[in-house]
Length: 186
Image (tube, rainbow, N blue to C red; front, side):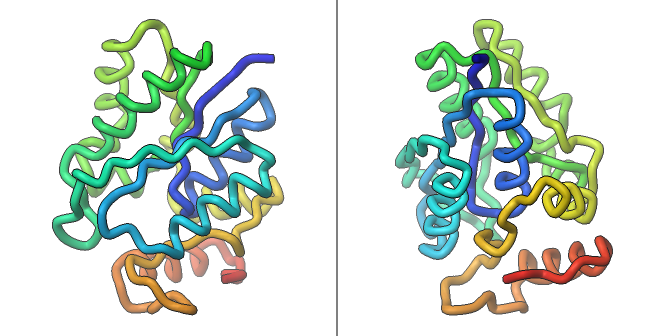
């Protein structure tokens, strides 16, 4: 069976990307551990990978530090370079990531054109962005349709028993579920 490496964070987009990829590839989940990452997000990442029955590789990238509201300079360049290296080592033909329209509207390094340039530096391994034309709400709708365990995901920039519902990530999640017409199971 064809192989792919899926970048998994513990959030909705990557959980849906993992499920999407499992339908066509033998997948390995890859998580880059960033300084300041909420422990709940790391737990969500492990839970999502376990539910998908995917091998999880954790790569320490603690030298990357968030600046504000979770933004980490050049993180997608680093994450995708690592993913391409792991993919080549595993004999995989693709790296799958859940970047979508919402990401691309906020970050230059989340646009398809950016990933085409990164992909061109590799050795024939494709970077697949199945949700490049999807909004966050579209990804949620697809995730619900695919049976993704959205209740396992974590979007909050803070740790706690429950999401804070005040940070920009929580507000975005609330709005995206509202737009999708679905109830957030978290």
